[in-house]
Image (cartoon, rainbow, N blue to C red; front, side, top):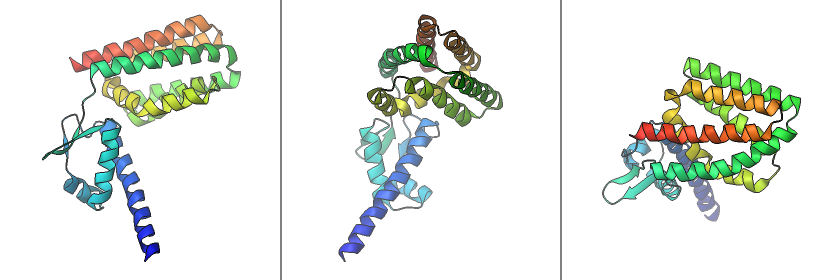
Amino acid sequence: MENSKTQRKAQVKLLKEQAYEIIKEDIINGYYKPGDELREANLSDELGMSKTPIREALIQLQNEGFVEIRPFRGAVVTDISIEDVVKLYEFREIIETYAIKIAAETCEPSDIEYLKKQIKVMENALKEGIIDEYDNAHNNFHHIIISKTKNKWINRALANMEDYVRRVRKSIIKNEQISFINDYEQLLNALERKDANLASKIIKEHLTRVVENFKKHKS
């Protein structure tokens, strides 16, 4: 009897994690838009599981700011405010300008070649409209830069905000494809020249451009 209860709990936990990932990705990718109502019954039918793991997944998504659970309406997808994006990117600027200076001093030729490949992947993905492929290459590029700090606390901080950054990026990327690729090409040139000050300046300008583009997107 006890084993049966334990197995059921484990199954619900697994289903909850699956539901959480699916719903979160649908919000990040814009399938569910701000203001959309996420009914447990509808999600249960769509995902082929009971309401219990759906409910637990929605609670976790509320704790992380992706939805708000309201009486009589269920879960509603939250909007991304300009204020939140400004604060998020202020924090990113502090971390990434620090990381890029270290990267400029420590990047190996193999790192530079890897970064070049990621820029090429991003460029091709945008031309073909494969946003997920662009997203993966973008993350790979930044992970290499951050890894140069050899600081687990910075890695954890960025990991915690990565989903929010992806949500912002995916909401604006189609509007500013060329300028973003140009930013990364300039950044790569600065890293090749080991010019830490220039690299820092470029990353600041890039992050500022993202925020300004998001403000235009919201207006």
